[in-house]
Length: 365
Image (cartoon, helix red, strand yellow):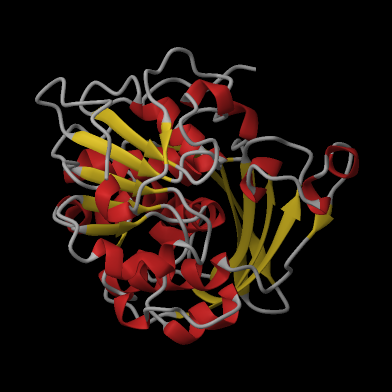
């Protein structure tokens, strides 16, 4: 049963994190501890039980909280919001535990993002243990589903690559400009691979290296396709695109830079592309539309919720009769691409201003 070590101390909504020792959990703790609108009341883990949070996450100091090893249903008792910061395939096993939970749930894993059970099995390497629950979570991308998030009981927070790539292409999808093949190359920092060392993230092999991994079969591919199809539908357009995605392992700790190459009709002008981008994100809380010229870069968004968006409109290709467009997006994979976006959804769910507690500037340099 949950302990009484942290009884209610205010009228603020109470929040719990299930799985607090990984990088996603660490970032949630960092953002929620000083959050003015909620109280972080409980953090669970099967590791480092009864140890203070700061014993694992060295950036923290005197949190007053320890890691508790208690069942998910008990962890959610007395809470308003429960974050699942668990590995892929682990959150999926908890569907029955979540069903009676009165707290609203935000899952950071990929287990409830897809609506298609066959796509989940193909890209996550096995059948979903509760396929009937697919589609029961609102996809937590505020720029596309803000109203649905506000009333949601369960939210599946988007993946880091999916957020980066989709945010660059959503305006074009909704405007009906997205058709034909999309070719995306996106480079990511090592924190996206998790807190535990693997051969592919070992420092001597990554620090001065670039390499591709999971080319054309990364698990975020169907998530991006689903999101862009939803944007097409919002604009009243039938999806007529295909996505080919190559991830790149980059010698960074944080950050993603995505470059998506598309073709539009020759009649589409540079002015139309700019108007479409700016109109879609007018009033967006965390998307900075830099304009044409390729200005998006990782150093400008590190440690923040900001997404920087730029693009380049090319000449008409005489071999295809279509105009080429390059869309570039940059974000911090642990913040807007991870825990920060989950907190953004929490703010919306609780009726708080969307930027509450997560509007700090990026680190510089």
